[in-house]
Each structure stands twice: as structure tokens, then as C-alpha cells.
Image 1: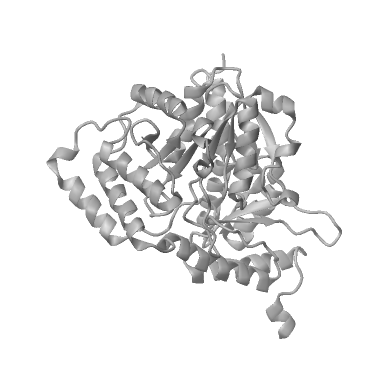
Image 2: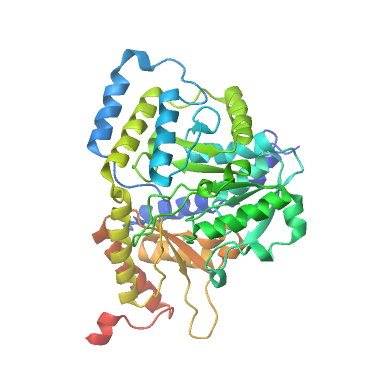
Length: 412
């Protein structure tokens, strides 16, 4: 056996693309060469939580009684508050004892759910493009992915009718992410009704990742799949406080819905971790209470909507006609064709954009084969910095014949 693989599990090779590590290396290389890199790659909030939440976290962390092992299910008081927020936000009733589980962020649950509800050799319907942890969680559990495409022709929504019946019959669960990462598709309750009817017919658990429910724009309020009558029978839904309240580093979220699936994940987590630090849970309670008292768009949603509007306007001014996302902190941008009808690959343009323009984005193929031809751009910088990124991107693309003259140059 080679010494380079002696202590490395083969399952690690199934965890997905190494492109995030590659992009990190590209950024390091560019900075070493003296390039000022504007990092629009990783979707990590660039602002801290609101000051009252930081104060609450400080108060809680100073308490002597916060340092015992927390419950792996989460404290009863947090679960009651999370259930209250779901009722306030979506009008749904969830039993905080049986139908809600506290998580160390939604990624924690997404990584472990397949281990709890499947057996090796089972199959799962996963989106392509999709957030990498979907495939990684399946791989860790020995689950075979059955990918369904998300394409512009169907507004990046799952085309339920095009998924073969054989796939529905084979699948143990299906992951849906609306609005999502990297694409921010928009759906209404009738879509979820159709999805659940299909899932119920084929005995498939629907796993809805709703981490971006509070980062929607233009007055849209994304619905919860649990608003559909009978959804608790065949669906669970992930929620996260990372993006909505800038609590990404605190690692807290929750799963709600089908009690059997939640019980299975709770049993797994009882064997592998001790849950979320109590001080963080109390801070999350304060965040949810403040949100319920606000009665308007969350501050984070308003912030990203302003950033979206200014950044997209700046990119279009430069000549890149990117689409306005309806939610999230990402643009899913199609790479323009060259004058001769050919195009750069997602990886090629992302590599050169860092090297030549000092702007980091993620190649679309990091999220699946359907992502080729796109890049994902995270709007996680201040507005002036985003405008500067648009200027650099425009200059880079014009230099390579990807776009024509900017509107500003045409007027000049």
C-alpha cells in the first residue's frame, strides 16, 4: 500500500470537488504576487451580528452555569422558541419535543441525515447544481446519488415530470433547496404541493434546505414546505441562523418536520456530539425574538438586496448582463461566449479572473456538471468594494473579448 494513502479512507474521494481548495490556493498565489484580491468566493457573512446579540452572547458566556454538556437535542427553551418562530413566520405548528431538533448549523444536519435515515446502497435524488454537502452527506452514508438537473429553461426549479419513475421508485429521500445555493429559484406553495404528492406516491422523504428563507428580495417571502397540509408525514426542513443573523461562526440551526426522521437524526447525534453551547442557544433565542418583534424584512435581507441591486447594475454597466437573483447572497452568472462562438470553461475563467483582475469567484462546475458555463459570485463585500469588483471584471472581460464596450465607454 502506498504511504500516501495508508491512512486515508477511500470515501473521502467521493466527497466532491476539490475546487474550493484550489480557489483558496489561487487566492494565496495572487496575494503573494501583490494582488489586492476582492474575495467573492465563499458565502460567509462579512458583518458581525447586531450589537445586542453580541452583548447577549457575552452575558451568557460569562455565566458559570453555561459550561456543562448541553443536550444533543438542544435545550427545551430554544426548541420552543424555534417552534414559536416557525408559527410566527410561516403559520405552521411544530411539536418542539418530537418534530424539532437543534443542530450545529444546517450543514451539520445535512452531513449526518443520510447516515440516520438510509442504509448503504440506498439512493437519493439530489439537485445538480447543488450545495456540495448534499452529495458529501450521501457519500459518507454509502448512498448513491440520482441527480436531477436545475436549468434556466425551467427557471432552475426541479422539473418533477422529467424525473424518471424509476428514480422516484429507487430514491429513499430527495433534497430540494428553494431559494438555494448556488441558484436562487423561486417557488410557491402549489409547487410544493405537487412535489409532496409525487413524494408521497413513491414513499420518498423530501428534505427541504431553507437556509435562505430570510434573504429574499422584492417583497417575496419564501414559503415553508411544512405549510402544505400533511407535509409532516413526508418532509423535513432545515433552518439556519448563520446568514439571517450573521451568526455563521456560532453554528446553530434546526431541523423541523417528520418526527421519525428527526428522531433518527437525534439518536445518531446523541452518539457523536453533545449539541450546541448553551450560551449560543440563548443568543439564538434573542435573535429569533428580535426578528418576531421587528415585523419587517430582516436586516440581513435588506442589506443583501441593496448590494444585489448596486452590484448587478454595475456589472450590467460594464456589459455583463447577469440575472437578478430573487434571494440569497449569490449571483449565478452565465459566462459570455467569445466572439467566435466558443467559451471559456468555468474553471478557466475563475482562475484567470483571480490572477488578472484580483476578483475571486467559484467555478460553477464545483456544484455539479450542470454548473459548467456559470460562476457563482458571493456578494459578501461592502457596496463600494462590489462596484470596484464589477469595474475590474468588466476590464478583464473586455480584454478577452467576452463582452463589448461598457455603457460608460459608449456614452464617452
